[in-house]
Image (cartoon, rainbow, N blue to C red; front, side, top):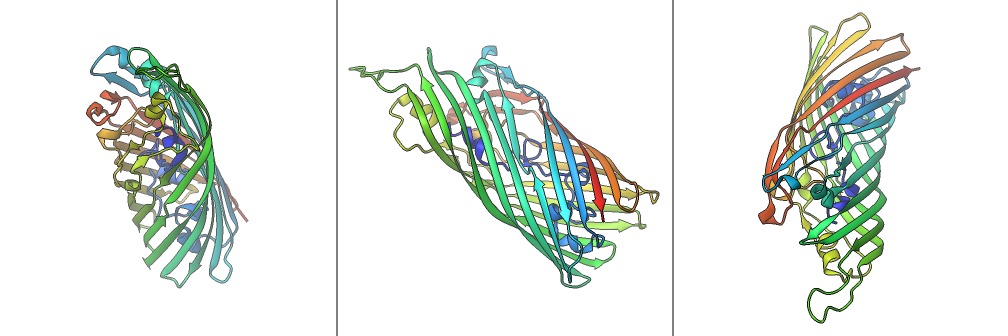
Length: 424
């Protein structure tokens, strides 16, 4: 059950995720960021700068800018082949989602600019119907929404600073059912929960020349104190030792858990060559090591040893901080068209000893491309596609009280983003 709010609590990550970046953090929130594989911190020419680097709002066109985006996300089925028996193998369900985002930036007010964004910076969805994986993760669904008002201040032509407040809403649902003890002891759970929490973000951009941007951004850790409802059950209704006294076989009531949405530090440099080609290199450090265990609490003791073992004992996670490297290219054709491309390397935070069916993550390679088209001085449209390839991973964590002894493969994600910008 600790794994339950792995979905409900963090998010983060996306990603960031992510289901589509490391763990559940989702860096890609707009046409620009999707087209550039998330290498979008130093050179951010759109209204989405309010989210990715609010310091850069200082150098946007001195107009009100509003941008809306929609992203279709496709997650492929993950194949798990167990080394012990084919009866323990299985395939997750393939899934499709739609993710809308909104960005707005004000005109200049005495070197101040104000912005606002609505994003989904993290998420998770995984469903298994085969008997063994379903025992631990029949459904894990996480929805994370962030509302982020920001402000920037232009100190001079070289420096700009920015920051904002993060209001994060998390909603999650988890189901599992199956045999947890041989020969036929079963356990079932159906849980949901949500929470509102707060954090902050900071940004700094230095422009040594008009062609170069050096940027540093930081998104704070957000501790997610999720509260929700749990419906737990087992078919073991008596103690397994004499005198075999009756014990409760169900729990219906409140539950809670605290999980960190990790901090992210990004450093990036962008340089424009020949007044047309802009190259950006970005490094991200995601502080997943704050996620040490998953420990659910209840207002009363569960009393039943099966329910306690399956859903109450702390589950060690011991995730590790991760590094990501991203590179993007932007080419302005000078005829209202802009071409974009990107590449990224994402490391995953999970040691093999704690990988589970709810989030069977692995290292990833990210490829992307996109275009923007300026309709007139007020309107712009764009589209982008990103492919996230997850490497195969062999895991044997049975000795560490895990659940996997086999190979995970065929995981990938595709993101198609379209967007519209209006300036006035």
